[in-house]
Length: 136
Image (cartoon, rainbow, N blue to C red; front, side, top):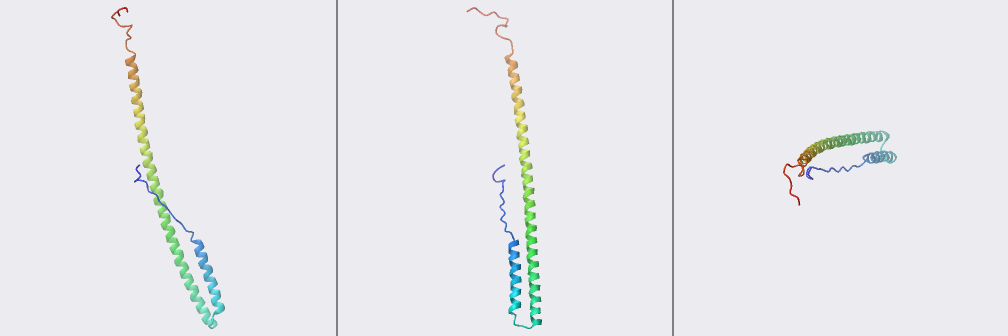
């Protein structure tokens, strides 16, 4: 596997819950201050509070929808990374099995060559030859 085949993925995550909590706390505190400082009548204040609550609800829904979409993208990205890891592992395993089979074949060829050499060495000795050797 070449270095071109390996890809690194860096995921930087930020916990969105603290942002949502701060946002909601700010909205509640803002609504409370608005009630205390409201210069209008009771009906006017109620209308403004309803409008503010609706805006807050809409903003929260948009925020949750955005977080859900972001989470969906992250899940898909994680699935892609897992699939890529599975493919790379399968490729590495196939490569390793191929190399193992080549090593086994080379080992068997070496053993066969060693046996052949041993058979050749076990041939007739010089002492057992039919021709007499001159004395020294």
